[in-house]
Every structure is written in C-alpha cells, then in structure tokens.
Amino acid sequence: MFLKKGLTLRKIGKQYLIVDTEHARVNFSRVFTLNETAAWLWEKIGDRPFTPEQLTEWLCQSYEVETETARRDVERLLDEWKKGGLLSPEEEEPLQGK
Image 1 (cartoon, rainbow, N blue to C red):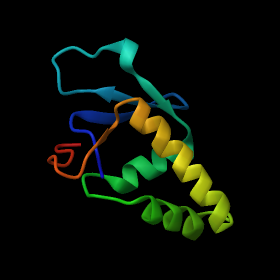
Image 2 (cartoon, rainbow, N blue to C red):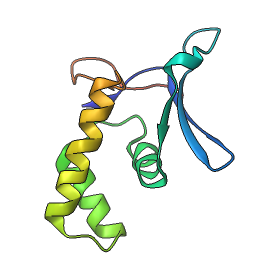
Image 3 (cartoon, rainbow, N blue to C red):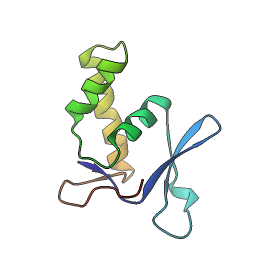
Image 4 (cartoon, rainbow, N blue to C red):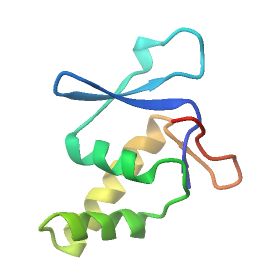
C-alpha cells in the first residue's frame, strides 16, 4: 500500500497534521492529526510502498515495545488511515512531491 497522493505532514506547534495540498485551497474540515509516533511512521514511509509488517518492525527497532503490541497498534493506525482516506491501493501511483 501507499500513502495517498497530495497529502503532506505539517507540524504546527506540538501538533502533527496531515493536509491535502493537491488542491489550491486547503480543506480544513479534512485535516487529520497524528501523534508523534504516527507522524514518525508517516515520514519514514515517504513515497514508497509499505506493509503492516514493515511498520511493526520499524516500531520494534526504534521503541521498546513487544512485537504483538506493535502489530496491534499498527493495525489500529492503518484502520484509522483507511477510514480517513489517507491510503491508496498498490495499483495507484505513490505519493509524489512530499
């Protein structure tokens, strides 16, 4: 899977926001907030394809967390991203110009 095209991570103060920058105007009703760890994963993913297993591995390598806990957290995060329309299926082009 890929992150959806045209979405950009911005840090405003202590908050991390995902905004749609593909259109001339930002629709602030469609801004998503991320915690620091989710923002770290977003940046690490960049424009390349990724799997839940990769995200789980990254979390385990960088944080003191058990694999099963990291896996559950990744599943919840990806579910939120899917519901929010932040992911694209593999057939589509990856995020460009992030």
